[in-house]
Length: 279
Ligand SMILES: Cc1cc2nc3c(=O)[nH]c(=O)nc-3n(C[C@H](O)[C@H](O)[C@H](O)COP(=O)(O)OP(=O)(O)OC[C@H]3O[C@@H](n4cnc5c(N)ncnc54)[C@H](O)[C@@H]3O)c2cc1C
Ligand code: FES
Image (cartoon, rainbow, N blue to C red; front, top):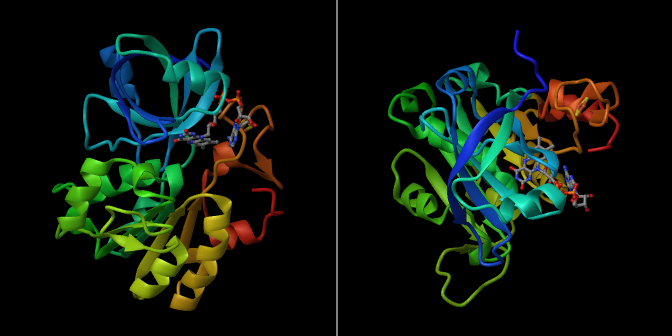
């Protein structure tokens, strides 16, 4: 059995600056060993620990989809020691990846359902993975109608701009990008994510909502979803609690009796309501 603490060696193949503030970059990583690439079998919603010698490890959501073969994508905001060092790294640098970790979105339950995707800020990363996965021609027929609302403070803070343009005109997904306040040059939607979800008013019949975003967005989105008729079991939320080991050993990420790294990071709202509000 593989040592779960042992990172797989990968090489940074490409770095993309995602936002005007230049503090979010997407790293395209390729495995150095074929056997590691084969072993890293993941589904959207999972995360991995990225490691750099001398800087430690950080949990980061996997932004690529398993349908995008041959590489992994991670979109990382510059926060401190590890993410700062990663931001200073150029293509060619070797780093470590440990994972995949945590539970993915509940893909078996999502099959045959309409999906509502709600996201704000840079938490959109694992939902980029989910959308790419669902609208891939090999998977699209497994899901009903897909509606997505993704918001940022301003246009320059929206991630994956090229993909957003494609999704906005795609027949596979009803995609809306929104910004918080009007801005010169922006002709798209303006409004906070929960308000836009309410205006669009997707049907909750045979539907499941996936929600990733800052706690304040989640707080105001849940009542809107409940008002639209979504059962609390049909609202799926991804958490980003502090973590260390990522494999249920260190006790750094627990919320009540649950380890977010092991039992999550994906929970239903019905499950979260039963836990102490430490997330
Ligand atoms: C499951 C999961 C998925 C994540 N996915 C992503 C992702 O896709 N992209 C991304 O950019 N980040 C993601 N994060 C957050 C990321 O792990 C932290 O920002 C990172 O570990 C900070 O490391 P650092 O060494 O650069 O910062 P440090 O030097 O350790 O800390 C710098 C600052 O960041 C704060 N900080 C550290 N960890 C967290 C955290 N988990 N949440 C909030 N603040 C924190 C510290 O309090 C401090 O103020 C995720 C976290 C989890 C648990
Ligand atoms: S991060 Fe160590 S137990 Fe969850």
